[in-house]
Length: 415
Length: 158
Image (tube, rainbow over all chains, first blue to last red; front, top):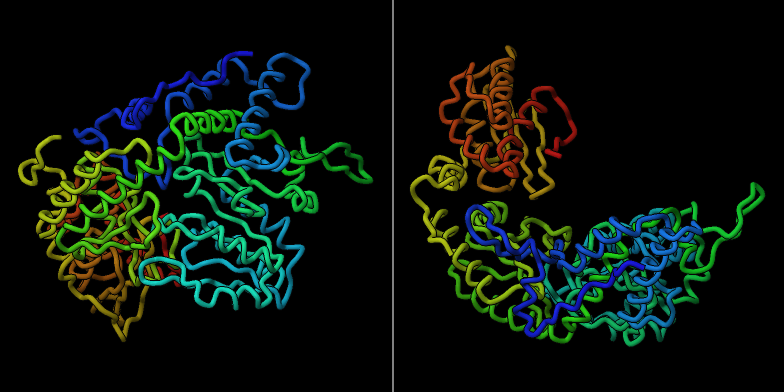
């Protein structure tokens, strides 16, 4: 088999990681790029880019189908990535790792296949006020389809969950809990383990939207005790269009397929179909083979750097960024929870975030502006949107200094 | 890093000209027009710009008054403000010809030929160097077209 594993990057210090990312070595509008938009999509290291390219060059064929050599290689690489991910999140079995197109599809799969047949009028689905739209709308659809009710855990001014009445909320006919591990707009790290434990005592299953959690911290689904954990490849330095649903095997076994098609069946006739075993029951059609292989390479990369080291580095950067931003006259920090990861949203004077984003881009600084697909959060703060700087393992202190300088220019331009 | 320069030859200064910043800070004809005969909403889902344009047409289909309300970036607010300044006093075909001229001027980089004297509206042409901001500059103008055609549903820039 062609070598699909990336070469060891011999990462001595986390600062040297930046060299592994080709996209971070270019000029934008005449300035070296400062990429502070990893919460929207992270850049890819060379090892991921090469793994995908090598697969396309040497090993491409359909998986699980052919007896020929290329199909065998593709299948090995694809299934090898599943094993890597199982180990990465400490799932009990490879059957619990389902490849999807991303977090959004993972959440929709659980909403439709697990939740929809199990809830009805009088039942409640619990989410929080800081969810991304992709962990709101799928549940609203289930509520429309079944008559169930969506209830929302409130947040306080710092962007932290207000759990004062949580036990009462949970005990009142809640049948399912869906909660973000980390808020994409505010950076708040939610106490998911406590929430899962409380729900578990009442027998309520919990889905964790881990899109913003998995690139920044060690995620152990066994330790968390969650029933479902959803995440995307492109937020963790892998390709777009691929993601994972971890599901507890006993629950997945009881769920009907989400989509019908090839690969998810054992036997098809016009009188009926026998579905394939896990995880293939939920992987209808030819999957995103190259994306999965790239995701496997991204997992190798993250493990090579070390999640603990990444978390420490990002916390240092986040503290520095928050302090530097707080010094800027006219700034308002949005999202100031005690436990945060990688993200700082803010407003400056009355400069609209979209104008700020353009001015920063002109100085080579990439940030996200707008509502961050979390309109209820913006509504809570009564603002149309924010500017959001988000960090990843490849950022450094100089990036933050560049951000501050660029913001200063924006203030002068609008003064 | 390169020195920060907010002066000469700066595309940012071209985008955020004094006239634009002035209209963004102090939008003209801002508010609801209670006796409007035509109105339309403009939404730019990308950045959350949302404005509502009101027009009052007289019996001869001349725009007697115009106003807008909503929130948005400096470009979209300034554009809406300049729009209201421009269209008051025009008849429907006259206002539509401004819509055509402005949208062409913003989106067709080759276009320099003018059939209309765009006057102050030329201050908006800085967006031509900023493709992601063209929708901000044209949002109010699409709302104008929609209002004049009496579309009742919101227009979006998507």
